[in-house]
Length: 360
Image (cartoon, rainbow, N blue to C red; front, side, top):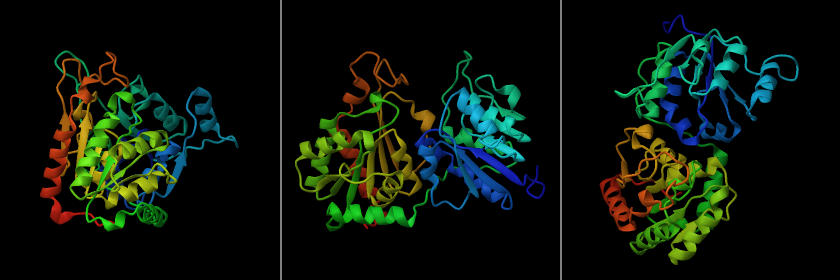
């Protein structure tokens, strides 16, 4: 399929995790660039739709809000007897589950590309197969490379690894208000701390460790902003209380949104985070980032970002890829000490001091 003979319409089924949507942005951008006249439709879960808000890539967004077989039928037939997934010339499946493949085929999409996983091989017209080791087991490979491989099935040139995000005027206004309310404009350098992660408790770094790190950064003259999602408000507030420094603030009392988080991260000099979505926000906005890895393989989410430091303690039981520590000791995270994280943060701040993000 050449650029001149390409599809007139393409449905892109976006990943189901916030960070994965960011890792798919090189592939999405490449599809838009290779097929500039095509109608591009994003199909996604509602909670990830705002990740790509403000981007110039999509002509329409379809939000699939309910999982399960009954919802599958509802999305197929819709309320008026027609599929809510339009019949497009091509469908790109970034998720590996059966459901998006069924939706694309039931909608009548002519070309359906994706990984041959979870028994959906017959539903695909062009497919990739997961990498395996010498024993035939799945081998960890970077998701960003997998997403790039999927769009290459449509003839798209190699998208590369540069992730990209955008903010909206409303996002920036919310960040302006938060910056003013929390008194962050007085700091030349603002460092963000992100303790949360939707994956599960196994990814969490101890709250007292975050508080110690915040205290160290504040004592060195930086402003510190603790990020949070709705489920981490109490954790963010506890970090601020335990840090006990006036230069440490959090978003715990601020109206939250993904757009606000994006706009806030864009302003930071550095982000220290668990292996979660904001880690990729930082990379997409060119912000240096220290990521604290515990139970997850670095290889699954490697993005080749040059301003990143990955910290992970080797333990006999890991990385286990479990949401909750099956042994109860959480050593992969507790053995990662605040002093080591602080040293990594200092190195990045010194290295990229000339590229410091503006604070407002």
